[in-house]
Image (cartoon, rainbow, N blue to C red; front, side, top):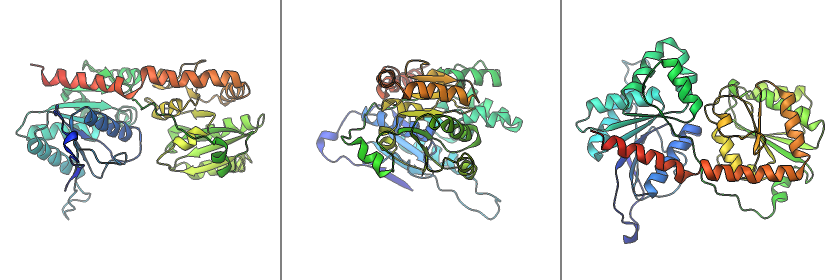
Length: 392
């Protein structure tokens, strides 16, 4: 099924189309899905024709765009197959869209399965197309640990026409794990610097039963083991022993029940609010004073940009791409993995000093605006596309 997202509502929407870009991504909530969808929207707004190829509509596509199209991958369920052949269906759909829509670029987010399927599709298609693969982390930090997948991931990287990584740390890890000489461009994740405009901050806090004098600490993740949410809870326990505070835990996942138990064991159930999965987190960030990301693996940390764009200082571990986002001592703090005491000390120093907090908050927004705003990063992708299309 092909669904058209938008139509030219009036003659003023007509524009000269640039290259046609196919984006292959996961449609669900998560860093790669957010970045891929926002990239497509930004490209469309600059005049590119964008074709999303996925199992369902990307969740961030919430309004009509005159030059964004969605192509659904339908997985046939044949009795001969034990499991539905998603990869084959995806590759076939990509090849179909390449030829019918005359695409110039396929931008695959994740080496496996999306880059592999795109490369297969390129071989099936009648039209030549360039393949750009963006590495988001899981394909390198998790899947590459499996020896049976290493050759496939290496092939996906080396057979792509262009490869990008979302952080310098991920690039270095990729080159080390696969011992490849493939050129990899570092293109960081990005975000629109759109501040939340609300006059009555306290009314939002009151809705969550948070007192005016209470500081609000927030953690957002998929509650997987690598996110170390238990350590977030432990750190918060040390913080709330010293000051009045509430912890917002946003998300859900396999560690959810374990975290519930940890909160109960620490006897802080009245100070911790489980928010579950939230689509729009700007309201929650607007009332937050501090963001914690204490992961043991983190290729970038898009949630840090979301927090900093709203002026929320962050504390993160010295892991992966986190130090590429947080500037220690200016817009947040970097702490050693597993050091809950260091987290608490930095948090208390910041939350007890309003002048210091205000300085960190301003620097957080300025840092995002200077290095991670959408228009700056999109230009890097545009330059890569143009280079590959005109490369002899």
